[in-house]
Length: 288
Length: 262
Image (cartoon, rainbow over all chains, first blue to last red; front, top):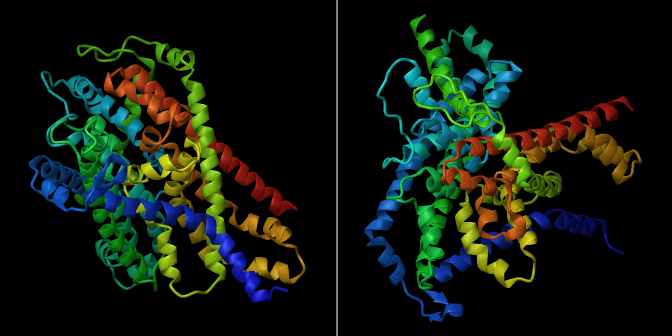
């Protein structure tokens, strides 16, 4: 006869097992396998020694450092711009009850990065829509070509186009609830609109803003599609670099690919740690 | 007054930025070329749509949609199970356990694919199944976040009361749980569907020739810049996604109404 407590415990384990096993097995295998292979131990390809040589090679390689810096720069710029404008949009969207506009700004969330890249290409490339609009306004001899530039402007536009609605989507419900709760109290106590936003709304939504910033920053930095289809061919981004190195015909390059992969995972784990700190602290008095 | 005007202008620019690409999609899916000297495009055509239906790519699109629906369904069911566990038990380190499920949100797709390549090569499972696991891996956090936030607002007390009054588990689930949570379930289904539907790299790297999805058939037309066909494919991509989402939310509303009437 199984006791009631035991039965409940087994039930709980059965409930959590599928999700936990998928996430734990894949994550642990990825981290451990990548770490071992990046140290130069791949018995299938007869590399049998552990060494840090590959990391040293990478960090003295100018091409790799350039691509790391390039992806970091593009991701940081696009994430900051997307977060600021997204919070701005979210504030206004939370005040409208219009169904159509609230559907309109969510549209880019549905698109995949590849589909969004098509749209950005059609709009901002040479002889794209923007060119036609500007030339219709009467300014001739303009040169509008924002994609494939050295600075990665096309990728930044793509990331903002995808990231901005995501941030707005995350913060709008919080602003809506806070408006119901605190707006009148603040006005009654003599708060101006600007003070109300800075001192009440933004601290309330702080957690949500920072976590969505971390998510889009991380995603933008290591994404493959955006850089591959709209970015410059030199410098290439770190994600494209890892993929190319991993699939190179020279099999010893696979270790370099794994080392780049490990660096990417380390950066993400640091960001994960920040995310965890954000989620864990300050639970009281917040609107979820 | 001046300040207000300035704020409106910034908002207008943001919305133009979001709408302009959509507009370009609509224009280029019906016009094949737009010469630099023309003010309006003049060559109206259905060639892109013809190509889409003649090349059997519509079938690949439907297959990819159905696959993503499977993924979303499984992810939603799993996330309901996890949420029920987390809400009904009181263990130490609950927060840590909860944040394990958010981990895939912050791991790059490329690292996970490159790292787990060997796992799926060595294991006897088929490529489709491996793909299913990876898709669930990436869409689970979003589904879980949505479901869990609903559960942490409402709790499971009503259901426990019904059980105490003599309802069976399935009765309590059907008549108490489902009407309360159906909006949350639909939301997490749609979220997981969007994430899975928009994956590109997983299918490129892990999948075989059977697992081509919608994003992959689009890529040749970006590279050789055939704007007409690329725009048509994007339009159909949105169309398929919107149809699924509308059907799902319609179904959810229907269930909620029926349950509240009976």
